[in-house]
Length: 178
Image (cartoon, rainbow, N blue to C red; front, top):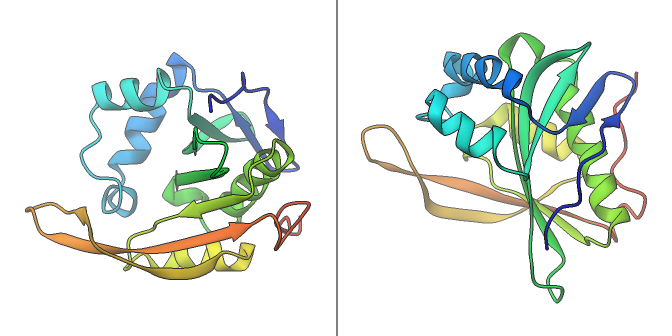
């Protein structure tokens, strides 16, 4: 199912919006930060252009007019399985303010309002900070995806499969207090 044209989703701190060419360099910079690039490996300016700027499934996470991260909103195409997969990253300097949680909660609320019934995440099993953040939003640990991610040097690491369903939160997950 194709995503609709994205109108900005504006919260008290976070705005989610479509990517523009002006976001390319900030995204390359964020994806080059050691604490980001450990999980998001191999992002060149060309790959950022292709996967974020030119792809309708990407959303920019903006705070006070500044690009501070991005997310993918990958909606399934089979109406029998109304599921969306999400992935996100945030600049290191903006962590600890629950910005990622607000971005996810707002994106999930839109997905649920448009008929999606389940959102899944698959963080690296060692990304404990992200996993804690997702659990605060209500995501449940479903299981381990073994040998899921190819890491630098070619070895494989597991991911944690997590989900949140509309039946858990009919109006969407709780928003972080502001």
